[in-house]
Image 1 (cartoon, helix red, strand yellow):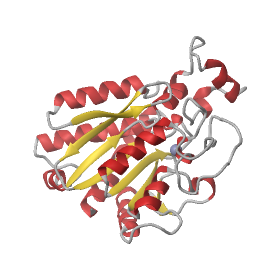
Image 2: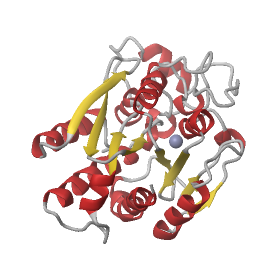
Image 3: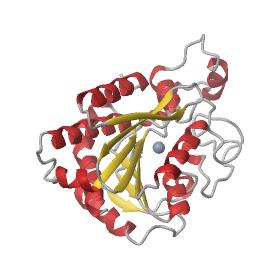
Length: 288
Ligand SMILES: [Zn+2]
């Protein structure tokens, strides 16, 4: 099946319709002109930015974020607790901005493939070769890996557009990257959590520039989830969203690799990853 762009849109719309205190707005458009949606919930001075699906095969992160936001909003509405956290207190302390699907084209290519009538068909088919999209596609519709496209140690890893790992012709070349950067600069977030899959890990630093609170918060996230707090190495260590956030603002930024297995993670793994990652967000909010 796979949680594609239309399913995400539908969930965003019903969330905003169900709860009058949920705001839904668009932060930009993808290469194929899909609207990149953002959900805002909360009434606090502290601002937390969470995002998912920088990578096509990692759409379970989008499904998780929507489920989390729906249940968090429901708990606030019912004045009930949520995994033993005081939601009313968190709601009045922290405002959450969530972009559940940064790379909507990439997710749709990974989930649904690409129709022969689509103008990008030939170009994208030539990039995957003998492989199928639902095994390899992580990039956007230009074949750029958005999580290597940020201006944080940006470098050439591959020479040409590819299903994964091509950083683009230069940093911030892609509309999806620009949309995220513009939102972050405008809203001046206190903390960022970028959800990826998979590995059960929490990355908290970039180039030694993390905030003084980062290790404490990462350890707290690790305690509630069982994930391992660590520092990224190799190609995962630069050009990413949290790397840029830490480099640019010196604030607490995290990459959380949800679940274990092989991408794309199966849909029913949402049940397993739901509690551990909900607690990661809630404990981070408490620590802010
Ligand atoms: Zn990823």
